Image (cartoon, rainbow, N blue to C red; front, side, top):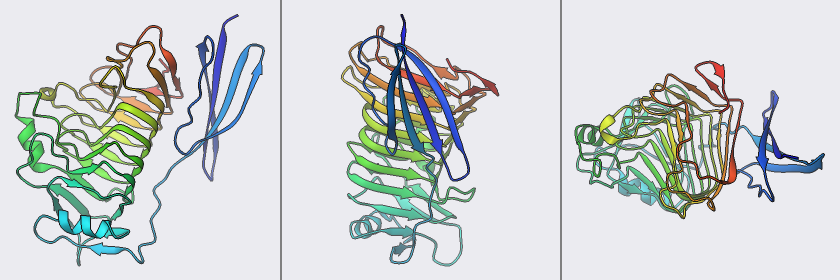
Amino acid sequence: MTKYLIFAILALSAAALAQTTVQVPYSGTVPITIPAGCTLNSTSTTGGTLSATVSCPVVAPVTPPLAGRTKLVPSGGTDNAAIYAAAAKGPIELGCPLAIPCAFALHALSLPANTNLWCDDGVTISDVAGYLTYDQMIAVAVNNVTLAGSGSANACLFTMVYSYRKNAVLTDKNVNQYNNCIWIKGASNVTVTGLRFNQCGGDSIYVSTSSNVTVSHNTSSDPIRNGCSATDNLTSVVFDSNDFSGAHNALAGISDGCDVEPNTSTGVIKGLALTNNYWHDNAGDGVCLCFFFTRSTTPIDVTVTGNRSDRNGKAAFDKSNWPVPMTGAVKFSGNTVNGAAVNP
């Protein structure tokens, strides 16, 4: 008898309770890794079928209590030092002095641990001229970092005007796609929520070898490379309710709404959840689940549920180069392609 692992994934909110069920054939023991913020409710076995019920809260941006935060306004020059110093002492707010809009200028800022940054509506965070090949506008290589905005149409905007222009005309793929707006690597307990991204010099949000990361309710348009990337060793990483569009620069060689791709044969994906995102109008794939370098022994645990993929130039859900056999599973449910229900 063929056995199945059934995942019932519940999205909880104050107004509604939605449930989807996914069946995945299995042979032997199947480990269950719970995405960050989710709870394993129960498991059971009936007629040779294993069932696991997991509850995942719908993460929404929450306006923090701004009282007590150190408020910073643009200096008129590069703002790295002021932001770093204030963030190292406690929660900060980036805002405008009197009227909006206003803009902060950054040159490859690495944030300190425990940064809690709120960025006001009407604020732009931009790069300056002179970024080198691997300079990131904001690098997160530490623990306990929150970057948040309101999630509104006028939410805080991250953009890399100088790096975008530089990289958009370079034909060498070794140097034309690595100036990411937000780069998260070797970090844990990181939240990026409620922000807008436009014309980043690489990915809008790049996550690599990190754990307990939540990227939610952000809007990304026209990056040089991908709206988001999830690479290498990941544990409990969630991309929820984001809008990724307009990746289109063919010179970078990749232009996906989101790219899930361990970069080495030792990469491991434990508990990656892609939920309720909208990938649209990208030149490449909506989302590329591309395990080029993985082996049959590489643990894979990915949930892809409730997403929309519309008008992308290549595959809506690209499943290239999956190892055969594959250890673990990619679980699809509740996804649509150009308005039609499709679960590849």
